[in-house]
Structures are given as C-alpha cells and as structure tokens.
Image (tube, rainbow, N blue to C red; front, side, top):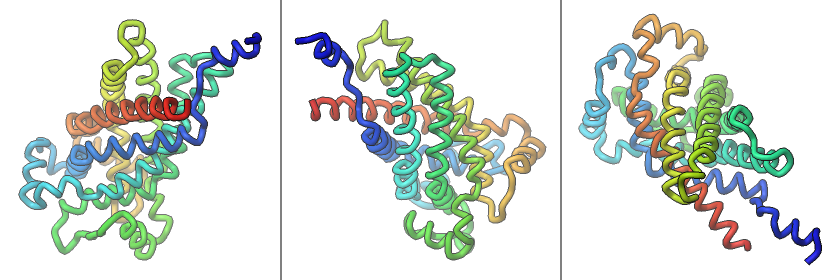
Amino acid sequence: MGDKGKKEAAKPRTIPKYMNFIIGGTAGMMGISVVQPADLLKTRMQLLGPAGKNASFVGVAKEIVRKEGILGFYVGLSAALLRQATYGTGRLGCFNAMFDWHKANRGVPNFPTKIAMGVVSGAFGAWIGTPAEVALIRMTADGRLPPEMRRNYTNVFNALIRITREEGITTLWRGAGATVSRAMVVNGAQLGSYSQAREMLLPYMYDGLPLHAAAAMIAGFVTTVASLPVDIVKTRVQNAEKGTSQVQVLRSVIQKEGVFALWSGMWPTYAKIGPMTILTFVFLEQLNKLYLQVTS
C-alpha cells in the first residue's frame, strides 16, 4: 500500500453531513418520547406565576393526574416530536457538521469554540422549530385552564392550522426571539459542555455508555442552571394571548415574584433536561456507531 493509501486508511471515517441532521433529529425524537411528562410538568409550573410561588412539582403532578389522568402527562406529544424533528434535527446536525469540519481541517476545537458552535447551531435549530414550539407550549398549557377557555387542539397539525387561521401565520413565530435566545444559551451550554466533559473524561473511562451518560449528566446540570431564566421568559411570551416582549416579561417576573422565580421549576426542569440530555446523546452516539457499522 502506498503512502496515499496508508493515509486514507488511517484517516478516521466521518458521517456525511446530511446524515448528521437525520441522526440528530431521530435521537431527539427518541429522547423526548421518554421525558415528555417531565417537560409538561415543567411548563405547567412555569406558567403558575405568583400564585404558584410555593407550589411543589409533586403537588402539580397530583393535580394533573386528578384532572386529566395519567395520559395528561402526554398532552402535546405530537408537538414535542415535531419540535425535535425540526429543532433537534437542525441543532444537532449543524453542530456535528461544524465539529467534524473543524476537526478535519483545524484539529479538535477548544472549549470556547465548542460553545460558539453550540450557540450558532442552537439559533439555527430554534428558528426553524419555533412553530412547533408555540404549538407545544399551547398544548401542554391547555389543561391548566378552565374548560371554557381551553383551545382543545387535537394534535400539532390541528394546532398549527388553527393558530394560522385564527391568529395569523406570524403568530407561529411569536416569541421567536425568546426561543432563539434560549436555544443559543441551551446549546452553547449543552453541546459545548457535553463535548468538553466527554473529552476530559475519556482518558479515565472506556468510550461507551458509562462515559456518554456521565458527560451528559454534567452537561444537563450546566444547561439547567444556565438556561432556566431564559426558558421561563420564553414560555410566558409564547403562551400570552397578546404579543409581549422578553424585557417586559422579565421585568414583570422580577418585580412580582422576585429574582429567584427565574429558577422556579428547577428540579422538574433538570428532571427533563438531565435525562433528555443523557438519552439524546446516548441515542446519538449509538446511532452514529450503527451507521458506521452498517456502511463499513
């Protein structure tokens, strides 16, 4: 084998850019299918406002079961899946494509570069995923309203059609600024910290499920703390009947509920983000391995 052949044989295989998007979206959809109850619980707690200052996630969960039954935890699942099919596909595919390009052309990116990649990919994914995000917030919030005030969307497509018809197509991008802001924080923290934690733990752990889970647990905690204030603002902006700005919502929360209200629902959020981060990256790693095995 010539020098050129040896170099080609030694060069690690990479996944095609289009497959990064497909695998990323699939991993996200698999993950949200498991953690949807925690996501719904988090949303309900964020929408309680001053009245829910002392509410516990156990109490809110009991109220959901009492009023809506166990299946109430899966309201909005169709919207959550569509959100991952758009937002998840965009953010994970974009990040992995940029990471692979940087690694091949400039070497392994450093931590600040990883964060920057996460921020860019998060903004890209969030913009295309905003309509599904609006539908998801509306659907998961519906059960807390009196029966006569509920929107009663039957599924995500019914929600998108009715929102467009009743409120105008631009409503599908209501809170897009807040969604993009949150996604930039979430993905900068999540994708950057996961990649960095994985790299730091690799010398001490075998490259397998335990390593992926440990790195994802670290990334999940960092993401929860960093993103929760932005997430609360985004949720309230998108659930509002009339358009309102992020600044107005932020000021209102601090004045009426106190600054620590920006971290309300901390544990339900981590109960969603922690497992979601673990599941998404574990599924992502396994799907990547499966693709390389099948195509080898």
